[in-house]
Length: 168
Image (cartoon, rainbow, N blue to C red):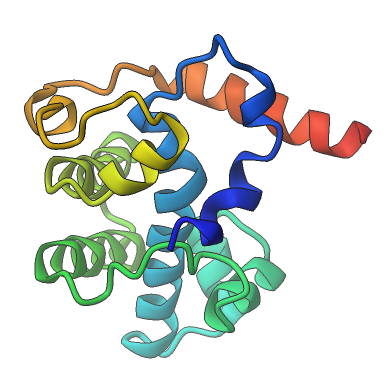
């Protein structure tokens, strides 16, 4: 199962002194899977065209196509988890209704991520990249009130990661 995530953290092993936070694992592995679920919800339940779903998610139509063909967002299979499925369904409702604030949409999306972290769904992936972590006793994600990585820091790290990819 860990092999599926190896491409996601290319070059990580070269940075021996870096600590991989749970939020970084979520950004690389979980968020694409969540977006894929939301995209499917929008196109299947609401019968939206890919281009319309893309506008609601603020991503491109080809990204929706990649999610639906499981070429992107397939790192984690979250669809069978009833709590995650319910949160994704609620988030899709928010997007379609459009009557909620940006802060409410952000809170809804972050709630999905916090739930999957609290349920320990990222622990084995995190362990694969941080072997020193004892996932039997860690409980960081289950007890953390707030994400240790601010949205601004996460965005900077993500931009830095992709900028490096583009330069190579």
